[in-house]
Image 1: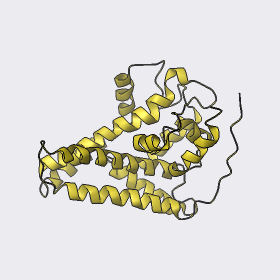
Image 2: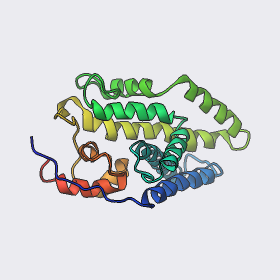
Image 3: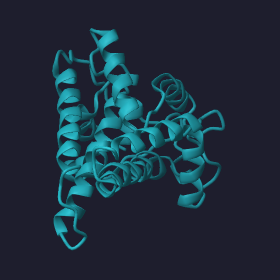
Image 4: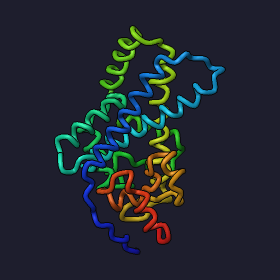
Length: 241
């Protein structure tokens, strides 16, 4: 087994906080604008905006994920966890502590029966996807989402809420699962000790698909790197793994 190139942790400073704030603000401003957008299904911009909002939703979750690893604000753990909690809550009321606990188990036991994201063998995509959702979605989240929807529709058109708030959130779970779990952790990718693979080196595609989390082997090898530093890690390992 070849050793991974050593990547020395370097100070993140305020960059992690800045990236988190940028992602959250872009998501909020985009959503606030789209809830007032004149909705017409013959308007091609509607479909573009849905994809944009989906991508921003994915960024919200990635921010929560980085906070779980303590790399949003490493020197300010309370702020780090506050931003993680906020991001997880905005992403369909995920419980930040539960999410953190399960995600650390995923890293400790990747590709084994102790991994909450694991699915035996190489199952059908949708079987694994629904198994994944059952692991992470609770009745409380569904209740909170329903209450929030009914409150928001007193102010915004319900069609806009469905198209620009609910649909992108659902689509982003597909995006996160497909590029962040299914492709990197399928059965044929059991390569101990990390049991993960990375997509081909292509930074533009890696960002568009899942904020560089297609470079998944690097994430497991260097969990102390935030999402925006994964490209450099992939460049170091591209010729070896």
